[in-house]
Image (tube, rainbow, N blue to C red; front, side):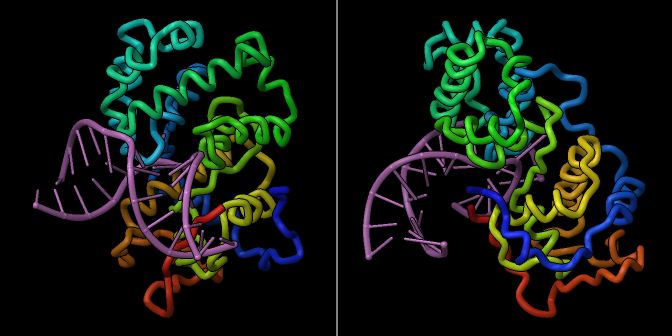
Length: 239
DNA sequence: ACCCAGGTGGCCC
DNA sequence: GGGCCACATGGG
């Protein structure tokens, strides 16, 4: 199904030296620090294609009104949710998406996240992907950040990261995810922090117009070189 | 007045 | 399997 073609994976160029260098340079990113399961899941949905601060405002609005829970979302009207999450953009859609997830959780797992996350990660990923409004990135965010499951989160930034350093070009979502998972230790902490570090790096240094003078990756002499400007560095991140 | 941000689904060819 | 489009806020 979504399993990457292992024969096509490029040689291993990605290693923990890159991870360690980014971590040393930027520090831990603290994505969803200390927050409980449903809050992280709601955050993953609300943060779709919006600045994190906007999603955070929406979460706080729900929390303030006691609506940041599965039962509360279940019993609330879509409009009632929507007006509290306006800051998250596409708010009516996202209100429906929150309700869709909560209905699924209740119907399949009696509302228990613990029971849901007891399911095998690959199987659960397929289930989440079948829900309207949960695509690959959101599913992987839920698995990794809410469920501590081994599922690397890919996105536009990870695609740009691999392309700029000449590791993979023009790969789709599952190929990128598979590449990280094949080349990193199977470790939830590393998956979690590495994704967040890449996002930070690509927003602040390896930007659309990059600040190559400040690039920590090229300082590590790991055989990686930045291909920016050499050829095409256009990014694809399609399914 | 632009631009873009921790996407997804639907429809077209 | 790719290329558009709708969704529709807030901060720089």
